[in-house]
Image 1: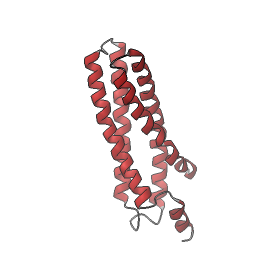
Image 2: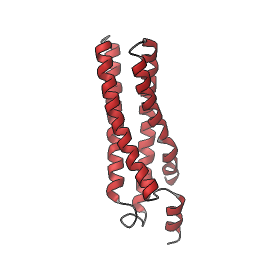
Image 3: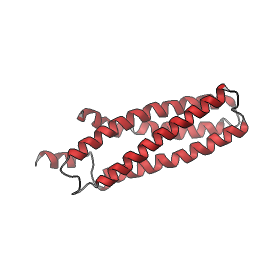
Image 4: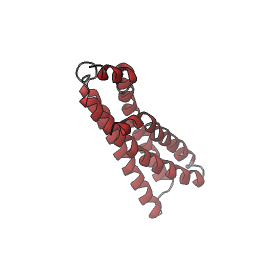
Amino acid sequence: MEFLSSLHPVLVHFPIVAFLLYIVFEMMGLFDDKYSKVALLLLLFGVLTGVAAVLTGNQAAEVLLKSSQIGKNIPKGLIESHENYATLTLWFFFALAALRIYLVVKKKFNKKTKMIILFLAILGYVFVFETGKRGGELVYDFGAGTQVINKINKNK
């Protein structure tokens, strides 16, 4: 399963960008409904790629937790915090997608509910930011998942 963990650094960028573009298109959807349709597709794409990012991230965490570097160089609490924020982010946007689809189906997706959805989307992006901040710390401050740490582990 180490192969899956190696996909994590690539896959995480898809939901990050999808959710950011989703917010932009949700804003544009306030003025033209065609953008609202694109926004929904971006939201769904973000959720689907978010599932892949979380699953590969779980594998990456397993690899790190087996590593001799945990506790010495890489704090376990930071891994758990990153994982918790990633899971929270995924569930938040999943719930937002479900709410948005419900509002569209029930024909209650009007200007007022669009504003509420947009506010929630921006709030959700705070979770994306916090997840990325912790992931960045793991990589850039502690070398998690980098070749340097991998070589150290293989030489022991």
